[in-house]
Length: 241
Image (cartoon, rainbow, N blue to C red; front, side):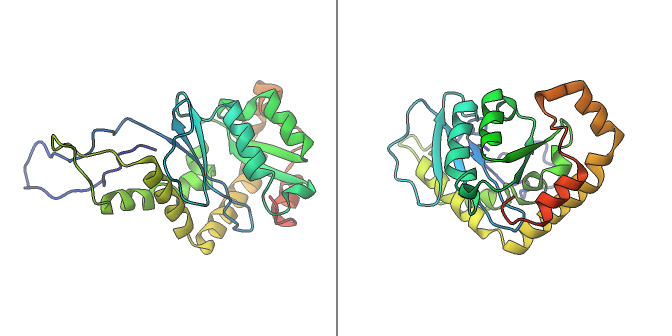
């Protein structure tokens, strides 16, 4: 996500060739938000990754994990922290029950270190192949960004001595993330997870394209034991997926 999140619509005179949108000039300055939810609708604690070398001294709200990385992305180090603080600490996670973690084929998700950490906690991973995230990833399809843009628009922006708009503070950004995540109703999360189960289990795992891609990629991403039957069991019989 970006520090500037202007709306997708504006009002102007009909026929205008250029419509100016006032921002803080941070349309390309990004931060990364990590969101996850379980199949029973439980929203796990959100996390954010800022483009820094050290943890900022800003005052952050409760209910969010703050990480830093030089490029503002999720690398293996950041992901290991997230697994320990969020995924392995989720309700029931300490019991090491069989679980299924569905995520995309981002590089950090596929390292041997991460695979071993998941295996040690009895978690199987299902990797959404390239080009399918917008269809199979429920957080991308239904839950992300809408409320954040609304909060940015409602924010009473401050200016510098030169009259330029100030970028929102890191603490304020974290507050928006928490508020946006909390605003999503349980029913919406449940619908998106049911949609994921239908698409992923009923269609994706049984298509020839999936198996062809998996065979081409080998052990980099595909768990050969992750059958349709096992996915149905992990989705349907345990609230800790």
